[in-house]
Length: 150
Image 1: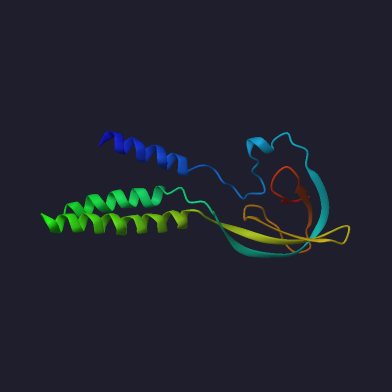
Image 2: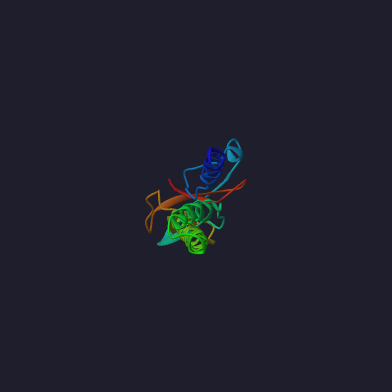
């Protein structure tokens, strides 16, 4: 039982790896890397949802384990086996759905007209205030493109 708990804890921590879409967060590998800076003006800003495309499986695993334990407490004999299996399946589905909700970030789709006349669109986390007509820097190279106010 202790080994199972430890295993779930390790998987839960692995699922917490930081995958940020913030314009203010750099990964360790992006630090001290030269970036290209272009200047422009925000044309439009639109709210979007940023969904992680990677599921750790922790939600389904934890939900399945909890559902199985809960199901095993119901009935006896063959009925108990069926409720354990059913609880594990339903718990796994519920846990996966919960993990998918946690992996969503409120974001912005920002359209920028660069000073050279080109237009760029970047989606990033909604953690920097940007508005139409605002002057910005478009920072790119060696990782994600970021839009930050000047």
